[in-house]
Length: 157
Length: 172
Image (cartoon, rainbow over all chains, first blue to last red; front, side, top):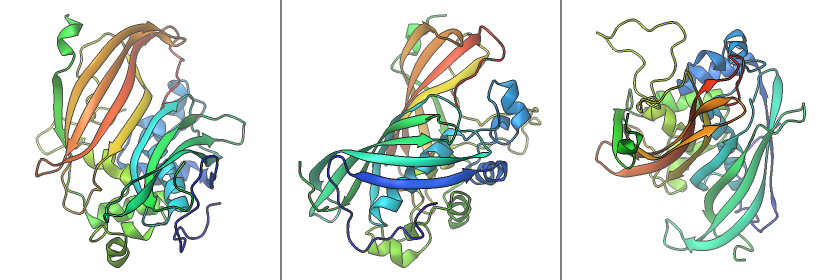
């Protein structure tokens, strides 16, 4: 499961090849219903497995906004509260993130550069590749994301 | 139908159903277990340089969504889907899937912000895929707040198609 807190005392190490860690959330049908109530995507396939099957999916599946939120959970867990997401995507949706299984989010840093930060001093602009996978071996979603973090150790490459 | 006439022009504008509120943020944070204090704690938001709490970045599309129904509207039909306007270009096809999506964020959403969306079509490409024959439509959506400030830009590729097999699927 995800780390209990996402407020590291210091900016994380950021270097090409470093891991963003892992975030795991169980995608129960109950969770999908809860998420639909909060993110307002009430398309039937996201909370009704029969409706999802009629569209060709094996079960109710996560919507695009939920996918973005899964990216955000991983990014903010890694960065701590000062992280500022500047881009999510392009992400490719290759398959369904279906309920009844865990979803694991992992990421690897692909580039780091120093940029002017919101407080006027250099921050690290970190671009990472993120993958969402399920225990049946599928990787339904992958894509990149960029986040600004206070000047990270080893920020320049 | 002249498909080319839709390229590089605004094809739809929408307004989010409600302003960003602490209640909406709280429910979103709860549902996704977003364990980050800047979304709920004013002091944490200030300490992070935001001046107060902000909405989760991923919540933009929720706050950009128009209302499903308003007083005076006809009743919703069974199986209704979110009121995004991906069908604003009159292309053939009974099905739509999102193929890729990207959002670039410029400023975070704050309480009382109202999200306005402007849809432009960047390209339309006919294609046969494993699920059927149709068109890829690339949209660019500019999101602005109630003061006209640019909040974010989204680029989304939709595949609108007629399925070869009614049981075909493959998107979110």
